[in-house]
Length: 492
Image 1 (cartoon, rainbow, N blue to C red):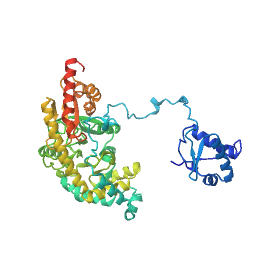
Image 2: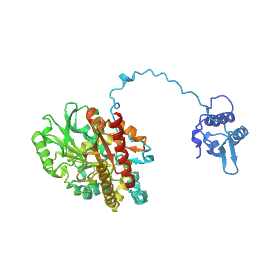
Image 3: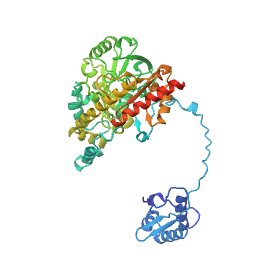
Image 4: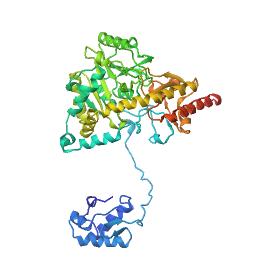
């Protein structure tokens, strides 16, 4: 690594000669840890030109630093920080005297709730039954790289560098409108589609536009924890609605409901799929009670057991459904690319809000995704993932039955996980901690519930999207053994 000459500044009013100041700058850089062993210093010519001084002054300073073993000269290659340079001292952390009363200064808190945590080193665990992580053995890295390179070409220079302000890549919008949405039975014009930084960003935009402190949002219980956090930040009234094997029940919605948030394709986290009859029932209730519906079409691509049910949005004849889609789960979580579909007045407001906060998703990411999808790689990836997930699901289902573990929600259309219920008296937070020591990762169910309590902490989620098929049976056996040990030892 080369040290830029632009990191050097001389104090013309400082004490000492210019030569001494240069020596001090280099020595302080080494002693502070900014300049590290083996890093290349600017050439005497470049540094002299940058500082506006004589080159001989820099050369003399470097000569003194050579003598003190701060730097070494490597032939015609230049000057480098010496391997024998003094080590940066370990100074004790400076104690700051913060006089701000942060308990009063912070107007709104975003911490404190029980959250889902995935270890950054989850790949090092032998049995990672965790949800929503990319499996590198399934992803088409080669073609994604080729599409990224194509998006960097001169032909796409404008798409790469343009500030779209509040617009999106027309190629990607066109693909979503003509290919993705029709598969869900949805017809939409470009003016009714907005790209977002994943589904979570789409949900936040929706909450900001539709909700106020006087309005009521109905959510599923259990539900996606981050949605609950988003709605809490919106300071609206929350109405948690219990879900059954078919998802949210419309008759349980309170009369003051303004907006309903639901995941009808694969309910999060129970994986329940809302039947078409109940979808019609929910739409009738929305019309009669005059509320809106936000449909998070969670994991619809992973309907490999049966053809997916039509999206709630496709059945809507009154413009009451806002549709949320995402490519982050089907491609990879780090992509952070989703989209909103809704009536033009709503999308217009969402576009303006997005523009004021983050302008638009990066142009290069949009164009790369557009090429990946339009060239057929996305559909091929979905088919490959569907086959792999079906195989893993069948292995896991047999292992769960063999080991006598209780499945609370298995998802009749597919998905990528099972919703599990531990025996009475088992706290899945404790279970997860004990299993981690054995190389097994599961997700405790508490964060999914509005108020977890003893019942919420009895549930857990195990996914098959990130674990090799050959390790599933052994991992499930370890979960069963640990639950049995906790029951016998009273470790709850």
